[in-house]
Amino acid sequence: KCISCCFVSLAVFGRAVHAMARVSDEFCFDPIDKGLALRSVNSSRSAYAYVFFSSVFFQHYCCTAAPRPCQKDKQLSLACKLIIKSVLPIFRCVNMLERHVEKCNIYTNAKDHHITFQLLCRNGTLYMEWISTLCSL
Image 1 (cartoon, helix red, strand yellow):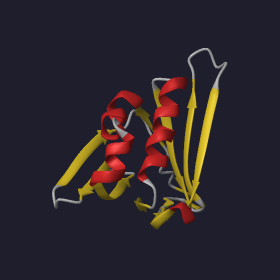
Image 2: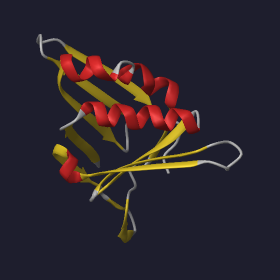
Image 3: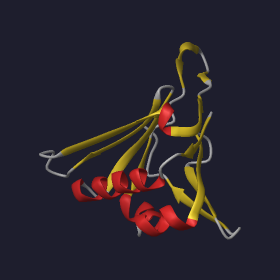
Image 4: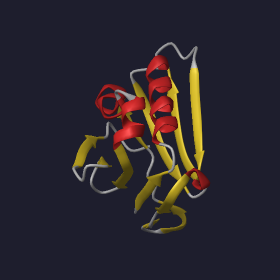
């Protein structure tokens, strides 16, 4: 039903998001049991980017998917497409994030059709960003 993860290195994840932006204006956010995959293909399908973050990369990683009704073997997918321009402002200055952000959490739910980025800063402020998904895959 949801993914919850807490980062070890926010700078590495931020650079991966910036790399996705060089390929296309949208990317796939695909949480699976083994980790988190980011995929992007440009409009002419001549360039492809794929970054996989193993569950070991995160301090805490939990990905649970409920089975689909009437299909016991297949689980509900949490994969979704995001517009890169909506995610880039969160990771705008990667070096500043590494110094000022203590913890970053990502939450998603298949029913909500949005992803929540939660940044806990070292000075105690909490910054939350809700990103709507284009479609579920």
